[in-house]
Each structure stands twice: as structure tokens, then as C-alpha cells.
Amino acid sequence: MINDKALDPRALARGNSSTGLTIWDLFNRPLNSFGDYMPMLRQSLALKTDVKEEADAYILSADLPGVKREDIKLTFEDGVLSLSVTRKAEEEEQQGQYLVRERSAGTAERRFAFPDVDDAAIEAKLQDGVLTLRLPKKSKPGRQSIAVK
Image (cartoon, rainbow, N blue to C red; front, side):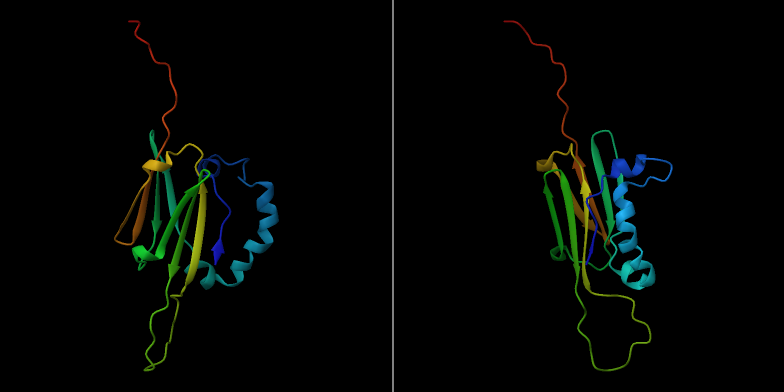
């Protein structure tokens, strides 16, 4: 299972310096580089995502080819969106022998921090192997005029 810490997409976009690294990245680097020695494992369970910020919402898109709706688990708690996907192994027939086998079974999870999301209005849609989430931002309290009666 690949398990990322909760990522703040806005912080990733801004970066903390010219490298964009944090102190935690330095601690995680030895563990993350393990995947360099096993690229098929790292790549096969990765959840490739895009996060876009609009004026009133965040749009998260994740490539999930071949994944069924019932194998996707989404939770939003304390400003953190968790996306967990289980890829099940196909039933094998005893005929033939694999020459190449890159598709794997397992569980992958990603977490993203969104501190200003209206969790009651989150929408999720799975279409053509792409999961799209719309995470509306909370309306900011503003100045309102009050009518005197």
C-alpha cells in the first residue's frame, strides 16, 4: 500500500523555496527512494492526480482505469480528503503463461489537505476511468448591510 501524507495542493504549487522541499521531505527521502529500485511496484499502485483551484472550488481529478465505483473509498474529515482505491486481482485461468505482467492488485491511498472546503457540498463522479471531485470552498463572511425597520 502506498500511503502519502496529507498534501496541501496550494503549498505544493507555491513551494517553500527554490526546491519546494520541506524538512519532512528530507526525512522521507530514504524511504521514498526505495521505490526507485522497484519502479513497477511504485508505478502500478500510484494514484495520479491533478488538483486545480478555481475561484469558488477545488477540482481534483484522479486516473483510475479499470476501477469500479464500489472499490473507491472517499472520506473528508478535519479538512483532509482521503482517497483509497482497491484494485482486485483478476481470476486466473490455468491455461497459458504470462510473458509480461505489469497490472497488479492492491490498495493505494492519497490524502490532500483542504482547510476551507464546504464538506457537505462535495461532489464526486467516476466517468471513463477518471474520478472527478468538486470541493466547493466555504463562503467567506463578508460585510452585509442591515436594513433598519
